[in-house]
Image 1 (tube, rainbow, N blue to C red):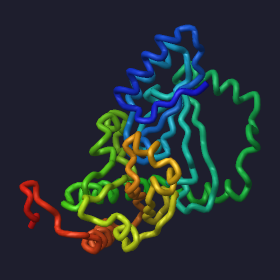
Image 2 (image 1 turned 180 degrees about the vertical axis):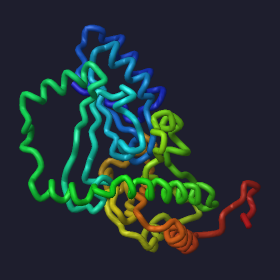
Image 3 (image 1 turned 90 degrees about the vertical axis):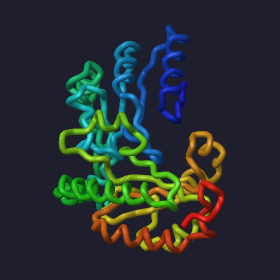
Image 4 (image 1 turned 120 degrees about the vertical axis):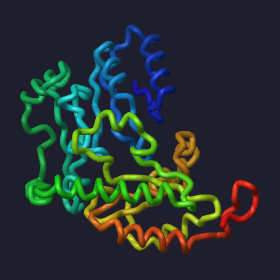
Length: 288
C-alpha cells in the first residue's frame, strides 16, 4: 500500500514516525519526496528522513527538479539514496526534449545496492530517443550559466513581490523553507520557482490575463512562464488542494532568463491594473 503525507511538515513527520512504530512488522520499500515542493516550495527535514530510512531500512528518493543538483547537495551529503530530476525542465531550458535522470548515491548502502541492481540491465525502459538525447546534449551545455542567472533574477523578483503591498503571500524557499538553506551548495541558490497569492482587493484573474509573460503549465524554460497552478492541476478537486493549503487562486511563476528590471516592470504594471477597490488599512480606513 501507499501512505500520503501531503504537507511534509513537522506534523506529517510525527505522523510518519507514529505509523512506523505502530506497524513494526511492516517492510517499507521507499519514501519519495521533493526538495523543495511544488507549488508551495516547502522543504522536508531530510536529515530526519535519512535517520528514519536507516532505522527502518527503506530507500529515500528525492525529486530535486525544483531545487536542482547545482543548487543543493543531496548526494555527497549522503541524504538521499536516489535523486530524480526532470531534465526536461531547467537542465534543458528550451522545452523541446523529454528526458529524466536518476542518480544513485554511491555514499549510501541502498544507493550502492540500486547501482548494482541496475547494472544487470543497462537499457531500462529503452533509454532516450536519439533526438531527445541530441537535444539534451545541446541544450544543457550552458545549464550552469543559466542556473546562476535564474537564481539571481528569481531572488530579486521574489524580494520585490514579497515587499509589494498588493501581494498577500509569496512562497519561495528563502521565505518559507528554512531547511532548504541547510542543503545549499557553496554557490547554490534558491531556484527559479515561486508562487504568489494577491491581496483580497486585487483581481487575480485580471492580473494573470494582463501580465505580459508567457503562460503555460511547465517550468524551467529559458523564458518566464506563469500558470494558475491549482486550476490547471486540481480543477476537479479544489477541496483536496485547499486541504493542503494550496489556494485555488494561487499563481505559480517560473522565472526565465529575462533581466530583473524587465520582469519587475511587467509585474508592477499588471499589479497596477488589477485593483478592484482601494486596499483597506489595518485600522479600517483606506491605505494610502
